[in-house]
Length: 186
Image (tube, rainbow, N blue to C red):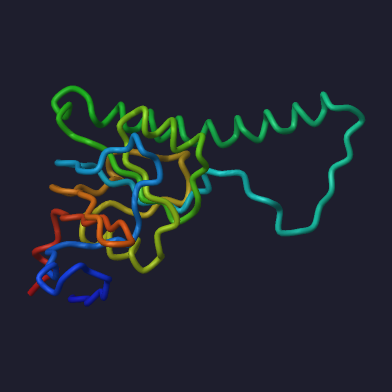
């Protein structure tokens, strides 16, 4: 499969062939790594940010304490999801695999607090990836797209030899060179 992506370059000589998958996303936290070797790839469709309800719902509070408890419980719900991802990273990137790194590519959003927690763990997280790219990632890197963080295991992860950011004039791109890439290219 070959896809031609037109991007604004400085010169025509900047064009190149990438034997992998190029995502038109960049890391959204300044502390996240820009290049990783031997990376486990978690592809997921899990909201890691507060979402407004689809139905126009209203909450009435008796006092400010009730509102604070609701906000705290919503934050805890998101934090618990992020901590499950961090626990998986710690589990798979230990022992004989200490040199391995971890990437999260999420189809939904990731809020700034969650990005901060992931960045402190050395996890590269890309948010709002397109469904088409998620499908290609699982083909190229292995693993499976997860819709929940409840049953995360090492078997659901893909693997890429190289993940790096390439900055063009106005946009950031991430290239992922996975273990199954060359079987896709014929």
